[in-house]
Amino acid sequence: MEQRFSGILSEEYCLFELACPYFSEMRMQIKEIVKNHCQHYAQEKIAVLEIGFGLGPTTSFLLNSEPHILVTAIDNEPKMVEQAKENLKNFIKAGRLKLIEEDALQFLQSVASNSFEACVSSFTIHNFEQDYRNKLLKEIYRILKSNGLFVNADKCASNNAAEHKAALEWQLEQYKKVFEKKELVSEWIAHDLEDEKESRILREKQFLEQLKKIGFKEVNKIFRKRLHATVTATK
Ligand SMILES: C[S@@+](CC[C@H](N)C(=O)[O-])C[C@H]1O[C@@H](n2cnc3c(N)ncnc32)[C@H](O)[C@@H]1O
Image 1 (cartoon, protein in one colour):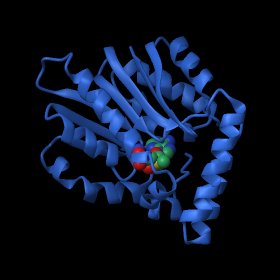
Image 2 (cartoon, helix red, strand yellow):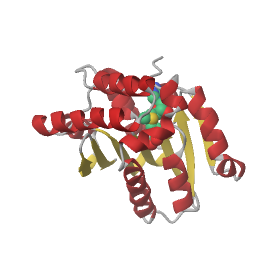
Image 3 (cartoon, protein in one colour):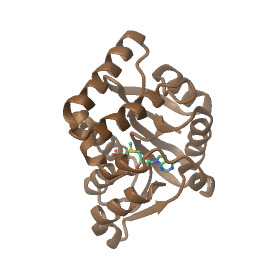
Image 4 (cartoon, protein in one colour):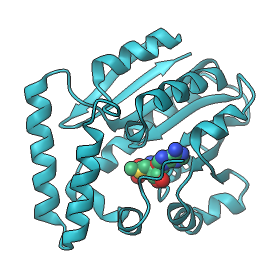
């Protein structure tokens, strides 16, 4: 099982925002989109699945936005899970949040079809290799209820190669400018260069096509800034 956030990247993950100033804005977009989607439902409980919760920022935005939302959130990195358990302890105590330490695909394969009203993810799905990602997206489609919502705010390469190259150069420069620890700079640069490999890169055009091929409808990119984009789709 791959764990690309062990060591200093998870220990100092909270610093990433310094190098990517619109990071929280994208997580808040998820909250707004899910909140709007909740208006379609009259029931007491709205089940949301989150893939790769990290320290829990998106989880907390979601749970604060709408009292009917219950979140099941998955992450496979023990140091992230430990920090998130502390950050989100009030939601766990209130019975509104289940944090699960497991590989995302393995977890999804254990879930019954048509189980969730929404599935969200922030800055996680781009980390996966193509084959794993395709399996994961198919599973997300399967576990969503009819008309269920999928939102992914993520690193996602622009269709314009020159724009993507400039965005990548900007991001790598940011690491050098804002992080004091040399190890953190080199780890983030290595991480971002690994994301560029053909076996892994998430490209906007292919991503939208992939979702449509799986069966998602209303597939839209609703936001782009430099290396990052937010995509929504429904089942
Ligand atoms: C870049 S962080 C994003 C965290 C959080 N969503 C946020 O917005 O800050 C990606 C997270 O995905 C988790 N992750 C990566 N691969 C995973 C996998 N195969 N299964 C579950 N979680 C995974 C990592 O441990 C990490 O916490």
